[in-house]
Length: 424
Image (cartoon, rainbow, N blue to C red; front, side, top):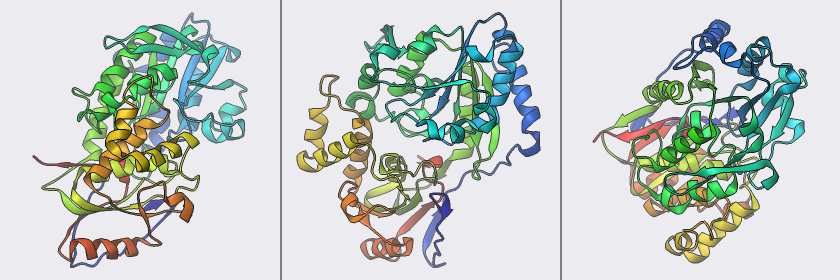
């Protein structure tokens, strides 16, 4: 089971009723990556080659994910920058914009880790998006549902707009990558108040690997259409976090191809819900804090019987999350789920990170039986609605005591990167 940058081993008795949910295995591109990358930029989905699009453009903005996503920027950015410069855009006119959404900005000390040494040594400008900084933002209208569309000004003003990212299951937007680089990646907090609001988050179609009638995805698509995007470069990763697919071109067409591939590799169907789910949160970088761990808990709960047991392995070496997230978790404990949601169901009462807490409440409405292996201390555990365990074996022993020796068990080593679906 991935745990931070290491692994935890769990030995399961052969007499237990266990199903193992894993991604379909695809080999990484390996030595063919260079060829596939150049082919993707030259023969993209639904649009012209990147170098053709970049011709006669005066400047360029390249959007990248922040440190919470394992996007191999050091592999893909050099090819994008080469094509853009080959087309005539000077490197001083290229900006890399970090799509933080409402996350904390990435410190300069982590830029090399984020983009790679080769890109950093090019001295290309790298800036953080700040959803709360009005000087960075510009309103360009409203969506059909009335959501204000406020986007990073640097991106809007760029002559050439490129978005990069990783396509993987996303527990509210269906899939990451594509339009998510723009919304929520580089929009203002007033947009996020609707995009991540109680109504959108509470819709039953706002879940992993679900795009049809998903209000979160529909909003992201509309915002991205209004903001514009000339080209995307998205990738998918296999279980070893090696690139196994490159999807470049039109923001919607290329992303759709990638989503179909990720659905094929990531969705695993089982006959019926189970009594116990043993899962990781995918290891580093997704299990850096409890905020991100909610994703793994949500996916585990999707195939769990009511009052079942979740055993979660998530290192959380950076603690719980932002101060606002912790305050909201305590608020749920004090008010209860129903009153909490009622207190934050409008843009006026919206608070940062409430969407993650709302998703956690959906897990808690199904079960309160959560055992978690992490590096959190005793004081931090009070925010997690879980019971501390020191080993996975300890968690399994407690779970079997609750559910009996014949309990149906599902093990999901890759956590939120694998999506369990009940066959019917």
